[in-house]
Length: 80
Image (tube, rainbow, N blue to C red; front, side, top):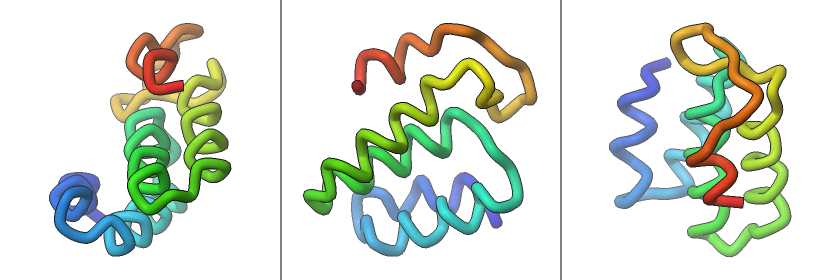
């Protein structure tokens, strides 16, 4: 599943984007997908799920899309 396809749906159909990000995350765990999934949940007023996703994005054990790790994710911290 294409990460880019999920991103395209974020503004036009958050529910479709949620489904696509969840499918993507089954294939590849990454901070960017968790953060975007959290944004989608926030946009459909599912704040508790949004917070869980952002926290997963901020987890130092969650890699970036390129496979690298970092203990700090400034964009994720900002969204929290």
